[in-house]
Image (tube, rainbow, N blue to C red; front, top):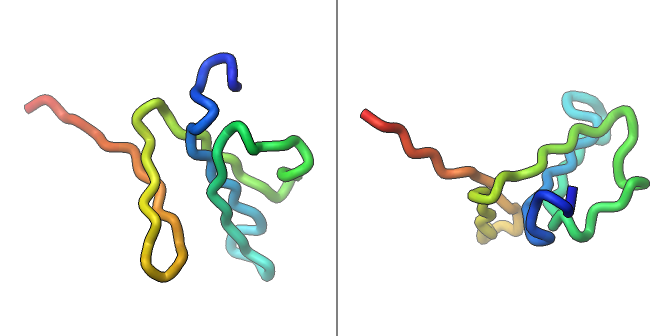
Length: 70
């Protein structure tokens, strides 16, 4: 994916969603390794516009701004 996206592109790894042991993690694309995901993991790879916000409680929010023409 690094061929098409910046190394700093945010990636969300979400494992065991809705199950015991549910966990999410936000990393940069350059830090993604194949052994970080399995059949219980959803990967969301951001676009060139995707940004992160570090929250005071330590959580990270990931968002992609949208522009709609009216």
